[in-house]
Length: 580
Image (cartoon, rainbow, N blue to C red; front, side):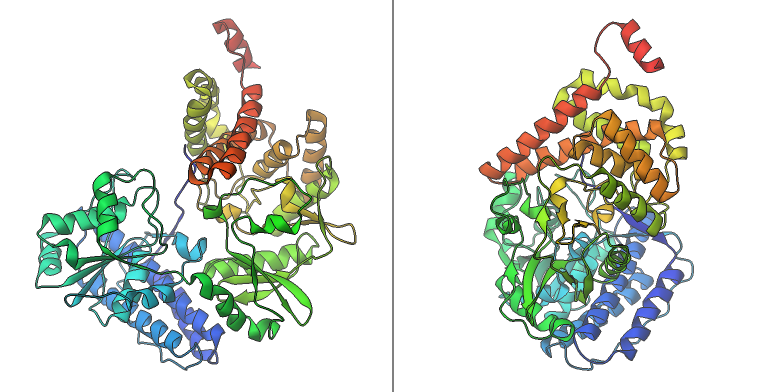
């Protein structure tokens, strides 16, 4: 199933460097405390992203990973920032840690592709946890750290700084996602393999196959490195995913591993991080991640959740006021989501945000609100939300899957779920792709209009929950035309054609823009194909009871999509359908 997607920012080094300089200036103006520490982490992450973009550009030019003067200079600065972050953390985030002096950047590095580091944006991965984990390793020789790109430029630096090792080398695995490989320039290979050292391979994950970790270790072992002198630092303690090779799975069990996650410490950390924002908590925060939030409404039917895709979230009370603490992302990711939350709340569409606490968005908890009932179809309120959201949040350019990429996803997912004949029924959209691209105006769509995502407040207002980041998630959809949200609401609320047109009219009136009818039809099929893929993949990733709920959702979406496909019959019937 085609579900995941990588999003990147195309930017010149000089422009990115000016952005980083602004972060460093803000850092120097901020008093010691968790806010200053968070800005320092932001500087590290953004410099790590610039390092990734520069290293990838050099890889593209040379056909392999190499180690130029530019990457060495920037790598040293990222290492110095990581050292400062580690020192700040060790001092309880209260010290006035000095900021290292940045190097000069080459003005020729233009049009770099900076990847979104998924762990920092979505999965509650903290650089500080990697420093803590690294110090638990038992090393047999001096350390040499290899950070796997993309996020390994930052995480590798944290591990190297924590171990007093030289600046980490970063490598880019490429090729088949389940069988990655690396290419290393001879000079860099000689440098990496010189002397007796203990290699520490650093990345978030592992994921479905663990092949990024595996291919780096394969390269080392093929050049004579003993398994006893290889260690992994990963973001979770789980085994490799279902697509791992037998040899990689065995090595994963053999070598020394350190797990970089805060785990049970996170509630105590949140208590400390939020004290300036909320004051002392009345009790430790309650973890409602991974579907635990379902117990808040015990009378409601259990919904399908995928714990691996859920943001970490907690309920906490301070001074008798309850707040929701939800991971929104480190660095610019969290700041962008706070800005969206403030705009939507000011329009009365979402709960009121209180601020950010080192990656966690803090918002008011609507304790007296109730979920929508199964038969509720509040068309007016939904239309107001979709249309007003489009009006408040400026259109996005260069973000999100194109109609052509959507069609590729549709063919792939429909072919797997409904068969090749059904997938061929989508061919009629091929000649229309250019017109669809012209009609589309990418917006920061909500992209999750399921009924359980809404609450009816005590005063009767319909509030949208989880409204901030699905347009910037770890999937291929990204920002889309407003038709994507119209399609989602149509499917999730089971609207007939009459109700769909009513909703469309409300959205058009609220947003001030017309919704293209052909684009809406295309997006409806695309939405269904995408949700089929999400549901079937979730069924593979979850335990049996949860997996059955996801399979049921996948069948529901498949039935809806089959109903909207053209009839399978004679060529004359198909031709008539295509001309309709």
